[in-house]
Length: 325
Image 1 (tube, rainbow, N blue to C red):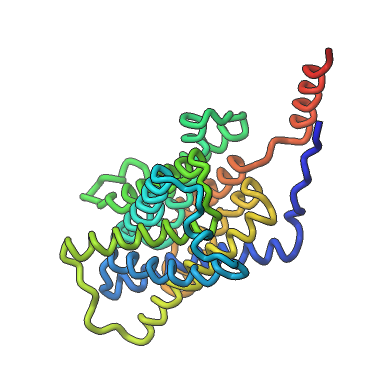
Image 2 (spheres, rainbow, N blue to C red):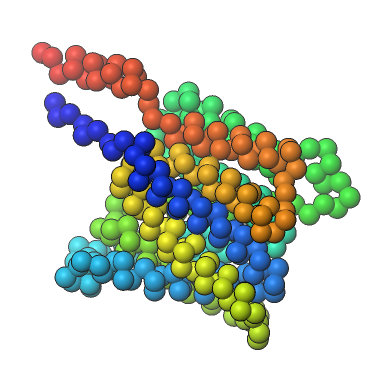
């Protein structure tokens, strides 16, 4: 029986630094987006141009050290069905997720939007159980329950939720964005595409951005005639560091720590968003929303927690007994 190669230590300073940088940049995207939306930039065009720029900025990273550019972007073994799946992922991951997210931020704060969007790993665990047959051990079930409670607190579920005509549209749209992200993850898991992470990232951002730009212009959105230098600065930040940079560092972290351990740190994104929103926008959460955010973070840790070593040893012993004559 072959022994599994141990994953890199997640305690390495470089790994932690990469994770902190990636999640910080992800968190900053909510604040930058909120500033631009408040300044009158329409949501679909903002996201569309953002990710078109991010896709183009990804190309040098894809081609770095490669001898055949086309083979990286268009692998020889890729068929039409797989190309169609890439389009679906692009429409879900960039088109639906980011389009819905920025639409939601017209009604809710950047902090609340971040908390709601990053419930997606919890939804992935639930959908993976339904569609992929992945086991839900007791820790993950507990994570799902805690996550539901956290989301309820984050959106302010209670007797006064619908009182005095309170608008809940933003919260609903934010949860739909998280659901679309989870769906895109499940599709990608089932597809086994012959693309590397960078190439898939390029295509899904390109497809999604073109769809958003088409939708935005068809529905009458128009880019503002005049933006201040500060607004252009926020847009540049949103496009390159907060998109290409955050995704690139995240892929590096995945390669070093593995998907399970690395994804457990996603709770840092809402935390950074809350801090940055307070510093830059002067925004603050209620104590109930803050408690909801903490519960969502705890749920992410539970859902992405690795199987305890004693359970792994027990399963290994069972397999050895099955192999004996």
